[in-house]
Length: 237
Image (cartoon, rainbow, N blue to C red; front, side, top):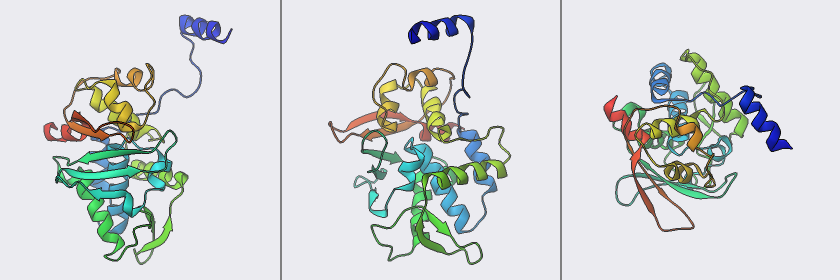
């Protein structure tokens, strides 16, 4: 009965709910990066935004990242992010260098780690609160809601033409990747989606254009190399 109702709604052109999240695209991140302050807040927020986009992350995945979860790729190709806490299942994502230094997630994360201090504990949270007056990094981590609040705040400061929501970075990378014709399986692995015909495929086919490289290594299978990633598309913009 429910399927019949859905078919009738599609036939009538009726829509329910708020619709898909607005995509946070590279052009949006360019505007955000230009408005971030040149202090600890700006370093943290740039690292949060670019990593959120690069790993196609969820808010709770970013909030629970520990220092030990982000390591250097032994082959020198960027970072390896071990997403331990996830809605679906843990996954390991390889984050490549971006061709534009000011938006590169690898460089941004390294600067963010430097702000935590040389003697930072491996179990410390990657993203933490900053003292409003002294701009020093505090010990407490974020909850998922705070991750979302930061994303919304930096978007408002940059006066974007969208209001980023929790799925905006995820949808943004899927769309940018789809523009170069990446297979849906690539983003399903990158984002930790369970393979399904309507997981990211429907979103990915909405736009066209861009270039890049991305690789993902699954815990349950052999490392899978994907030749394209939305972050390499920065080279052509």
